[in-house]
Length: 228
Image (cartoon, rainbow, N blue to C red; front, side, top):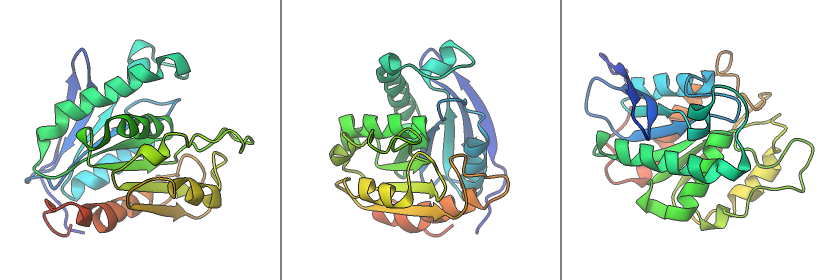
């Protein structure tokens, strides 16, 4: 890994976007916009771990708060307001699109990743060039018949999924079948004996995710700046 020195973290608060933006100390290879899960916020452990690792490797990473979390500090999102959460993701992508000459990759953890994937299904590559989904909530725990896959065939950008083998929101086999619905290159990183939180404090989740961003996603974009 080629570490990048003199990185910075900047807080952004506007009417439309709330984010912590990690910027490397040299020209960025790509920009990632990552949203949190249903019970968290932009300071979630998984998002911090991913942002720090990816920034060390030369990427700009914006950890964003979704609109429902900005309205109230605790509690889950409401299905009725999920379109507004997608609009928040759109606003963040528009704000940070110019942070690098490389691709814009959007995604996030669990609920945040799901909303990002739905926004990409609706807007296509006009919104983002790729997707990074960690612990995609394929179905509610114990309810494999309630799959959240309707929009997946409408996704046409490369998609990277990071999945824990003991995640109750979907087995690896279920995830593989679901990801196969996406009409674009896809790749799944499976972490053994890891649940929905991906346990980034004890497992090399962030490093393995960054490896996959480098090895799977970046070669698909002509603006890749090389190995890191």
